[in-house]
Length: 353
Image (cartoon, rainbow, N blue to C red):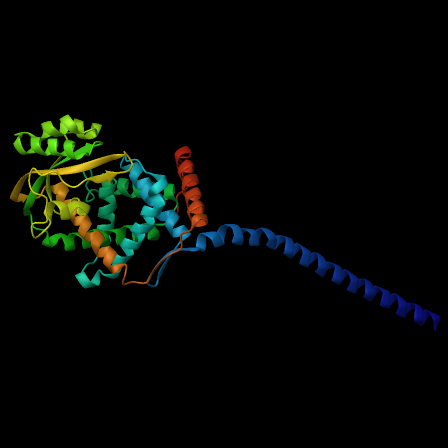
């Protein structure tokens, strides 16, 4: 009987010990899992989630902070490839605006019958890299060099090829839209020859004296040099040259106003305050040409102005939301600057598959 009880006690003790070990194992396992989750949760909170916050929304398309960082890196590296300076300070706002404009152009593409083919994406990048002078993509050797340059470019900015193609594709929609809207720009337009003069003394006697000389002089640039206190105006005689409507939109009413509202030739304009330089600026029309051919530079300026007006109009019609605050600005700027330092100091990159 005693042996039987003793055996039961032993079995019970073994069972209790087994249960205790099981509980202890479960406790250790739970603690281990919890400690394992700390770095994962920390990564999610501090790395993954900030990247996924929305920086821009255009209709149903959302652009995260990560998208914006990649877009800035793309344009930054492209500027470096072209030998141009890239201003990190203003790049965030410009990139955000450009992203929005590209998306609006994409939304309205079908309305204008615009499409982008796969070969156009490669061609656009090929041209942006400046390879068009000595390269021929029909040559296997040149095509291989181009592919290697593209891979190197993608590695340096750390984005995959699908993202790269999407950025270029939508930028091409923007460019095609600009060309389409520019079809109606007349190549022959009225131009006016404009001078600028900067003054501190705008007393009636001084303005009358200048106006008198403008009326009788055969060379307005001499008057500008004589009276202007702006060093830039003096060096260039305040000479803006021949200007068509649309080059200086804020002053179109002054130069090209209708119903005799425009400034008359050789007449000193009303004063415009230049607060940055603490001077008053005046404008003078020296001559008028009713039919002058647009220069290529002026055509591009007018074309971009028409496109800007289009985006301003359409942005009021589409659902567009910006998620940009001080915290987002600082976060994105830090990531772009870190990437810039990394790329400058580390030219060897791992190929992205």
